[in-house]
Length: 346
Image 1 (cartoon, rainbow, N blue to C red):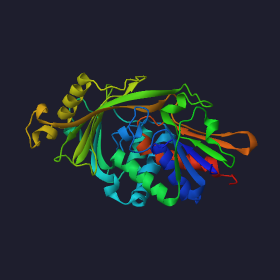
Image 2: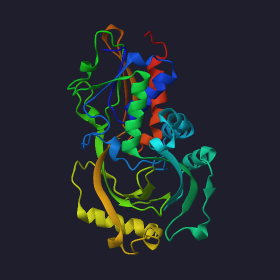
Image 3: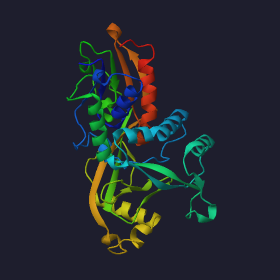
C-alpha cells in the first residue's frame, strides 16, 4: 500500500487528494480506497445524489464559513484541472432568500467574497421574506463532476482500490504513514471510528427537463428548504428540492414528497411553469427522475482531527459536512492536509 491512503471516494475524499497534489505530494504515493466509486449508485454513496451548487446553506460557525470561502475562491483551480466547465462544474446566477435576517458573521463573510453580490430590495422580496441576495454561484453536475475528477486523479498517478473496510486499521499497509478518514456517513459504523454523532439527513429531489431555466433559486425558512438548481452540461436537467430530514434512513422516494417539492418550487419560481415549452401546469413538466439521498450530518459539526497511532502512523478524520460537502469540502481538505503534513516525514 502507498504512503498515503484516503478512505472514501466521495467529494471530500477527492478534494483531499487534490490538496495533497497541490502540496507537492507525489500522486504515486496516494491511494483512494472505497466500497463505491463514481458511476456506482447506492444509498450509502451520497456524493452523486447531491443537488450540487454553492449556496448559503451553512450556518454561522466561523470555521465552516471559512471552509466555504476557501472552496468558492479556489474552485476555478479544480475546474481547470479536470478539463473545464464541460466536465461538470460551471457557473450560474443564484438567488437566495431567507425568512429571517442573517447573523452578522455570516452576512459579513458572504459579502466579502461572493462574486456579483447584490442585495435584493425589500419591496422585491416575496411575502414573509426578510432578506435576499443574488450572486454568481458554482454549480456541479455531481455524477459527471465526480467521474471527471476521478479521471484527473488517475491521470496524475493516484491509485484507486475498490474495497470494503470493516475497521479503519485495514486501510494501513506496511508502508502507509497517513490515512485520511473521508467516509462520511460510514464513520458512524466503521470500526475504530464508530462516531455515533454522525447521522443521515435525508433529502429527496425531483429532476426535470427545463431548458428554459439557467439559474438557481433557493429559499431558507423554518420549514423544509426549497431549492431550484441548474445542473450544468446535463441535457437541461433542473434539480427541484427538497427536504432535510435528520435521522431518516429511508432510501425510497415518496410520491407525497415529490408532489410537495413540485408545488413549492413552482410557487417560489413561477418561470418553471410559465416558460415551460410543454405547458404551464405541473403535470406538463417532464420529470426525468426522483431521487433520495442521505447527507452525512454530524452533531457538533465537521470533524477534522488528527490522531497519532502506534509506530508513528497518523489518522486524520475529515467528515461531517452534511449537505455542504461540495461547497465547503475544498476548505475542509486544506485544513485536513495541513494537519497531516505539517511536521510529517513521508
